[in-house]
Length: 124
Image (cartoon, rainbow, N blue to C red):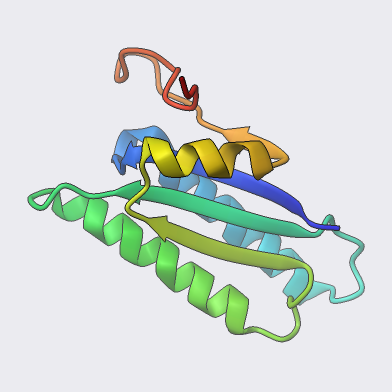
């Protein structure tokens, strides 16, 4: 059974929302499995979600990085069945209502002083 982890599921991708830190964590997990294929690791599916505003170049680069990490990890047969990475485009409250209840872990860690509240994962 896989642990489904949603990391950085926000309506908007921003560099201050720790998306890059979470992406690096996925790369660390990937490298650990590559270094020792017999390593007993939790089975993980990691989901990233969000949108970039049209003029926000850095957010578009972050999305490209996330999809590139996913493409490498998901194509590698040595980690198949151990780690999977997906980017969900056009994330919205409607999608969150379906996605969040299906996850084991939801990580939305806001950086103090940059976000009005840490309630973006709460659906009405």
